[in-house]
Image 1 (tube, rainbow, N blue to C red):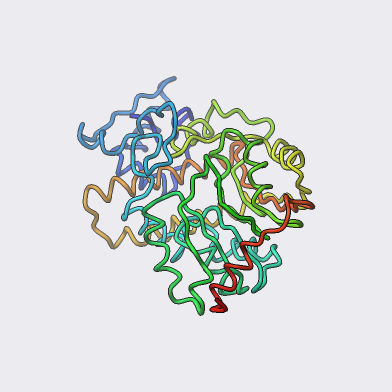
Image 2: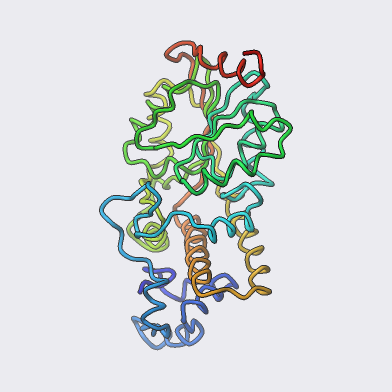
Length: 349
């Protein structure tokens, strides 16, 4: 069974409440281990959990290829009702990412959305970004999601909008990337780092935007001097549900330029991402202090905390979150489909 921070000396692990909470669930006595660290070159940590618990909580070795059809590369469901509830508890109703009350609204505001424009949201989740864009700016949003569970749950999260028809949810396969139409704007949150063929990705993004179309996204990237095979980065890499394909931000900028984009802004979002992740974990901690969990739910919560904690450690060891805003000066041409959709939704046909 791998340690929470596999590959890191225990003397480098900070014993804050997140570490202690996960360690308690995993059956580790970190204080005793830390005491032994001073006496041993290589500490040995005894796992006090049962074999059954090990099977439930341990992260298996990665499969050869990640699955986007509901399963992660560890053979577990990418989403389930418990994890969905955890996400909204930590990040807010309709959101599966940190930042709902901080940088996500600012991210959306960088696009000049209006009631006659169309936005492609490629990481729809539970509809938080799409709902905000439709309500705040009146824009039409095509929200694309790969998870069947999220796709089934998301429409209920936008029913209270003044005009719910302005948000339409669609099944989406990131590997094939065929939206069937073009949009004025496109947004995505921490999605592209799972794509191996980045050059094909940038070309596909160019193909879904109209003339002067704008793309804004956040994504995990690798520091130029970072080593993914060591320390906290390696532990995070093994824990992530879909296999990361990280590149430095310079390669992303170069790839976007080759696809015809004019990259206007690159901003480091690592600090606000860390802050919002810690706030979400604090909400979860407060909730857990007054909640009794069933064994299955406890295992899911343990995995979620382990993933987020490893992410936080990796963000201090060469992993970054970047915001990129790019404009496509010339696209493949006009899109007559949007006028038809607009007329249908407004009742003119």
